[in-house]
Amino acid sequence: MSNIESNTEKPILKQSIALSENSKYTFDDISTAKSAFLILPVVIQTALEQAKRVVLIANNPAVTTAQLEMLLQPDDVLVLFNHFIHADFFASHQLASLLPKLLFFRQIGDSKLHFGLPPRSNHISVVEQMAETAPLGILTSNQPYQFPTLADDPSPNDDPITAHRILDIPSNMQKLLSSPTYHSVLSEHHKVVADYPCFTDIHSSAPSSGFLLYRLMLVARAYLQHIQNTKLPLEIVMIGFNDNDKTAHFWHGHNWDFERQEMSRPLIGVTIHRY
Image (cartoon, rainbow, N blue to C red; front, side, top):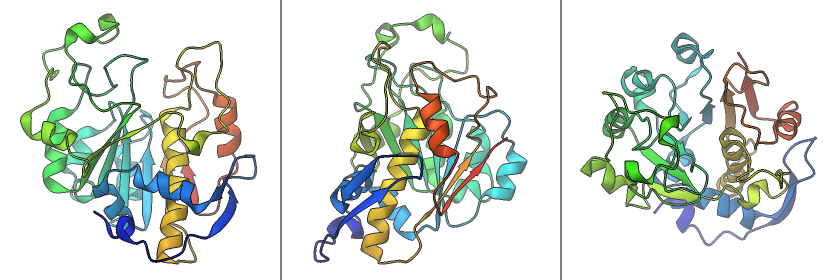
């Protein structure tokens, strides 16, 4: 258990915080921030207590490893998404391999599957390597990992089998996925996105993975700042979160206009690197 989670002596102060100039959403007391912080795997809670920045890295092919080398710092916690880019870099680079990492895997519709985990395309062998060199947390959306088979895939033609694809979770990774220290579940409709305007005519409409984790970290850092009694919040750095079509993943079920409007005026302590 982290020091943050066990600290119950300090009084919880009521407050109302708007997340951005463009957002009408506020959370009315620190308990919402506490719930956001405690939804994270315990190993990531501990890492954030000691970090100066949390860095969210989009699956944007315009982001290069040379750019990452220039941007990453020794006191960072990294957030990677689904079938994340530059897997070998994050597992073997002299600095990047040593940074704590939170891996977010999005549920595929209402199925047993998550993007980036078997039997879909994945970096499981690289994730194993990551877990050996730095703290590693796994966050799945809506449900714990179900250890699905190929027969559970509702649309197998979307992700054809290749010779390099791992279809089963190795035993050491199964242990991580079975432990609350390393694995937890985040609802796509958590309170941190209570104001998100989903499309009622689109099944599974919800915030994009990047926006969901941005809001989660934004609210979680308020709890961290409150408990640690610091003047400046944990910095949030977003790399490759563009408002163009370079990523080729602009699914129509996400409300991109809403997300772009909020991200156009980031809060103090939030930096966005677009490519």
